[in-house]
Length: 110
View 1 (tube, rainbow, N blue to C red):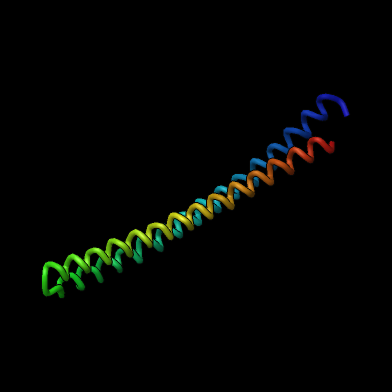
View 2: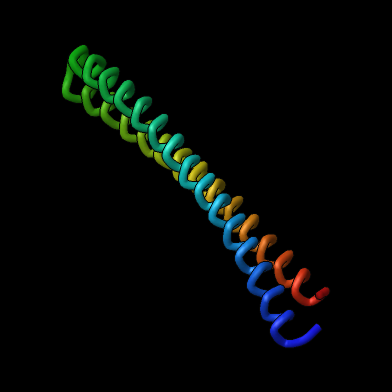
């Protein structure tokens, strides 16, 4: 194959990989939005429950215990959300890496 033909094949492979990578990144962003929306909903529910529970505290020490439990639960929930987002991004990165490898194999095999 001549130089122009090789260049065209490389361009096609790169365009295909870029298009598929864009789909992978778009799916990742969609997952991040879903995860964030679910977190916001449960966070609002936790906040409302916390407020009601705190109103029922009989002592300052009781209020401190309720607040401490709320903070621990909130930190745990934040960690779970961050892990889910990291997993979605890792999956997208793996897909993009594989697409790049496929594009290079296609070019090198041509």
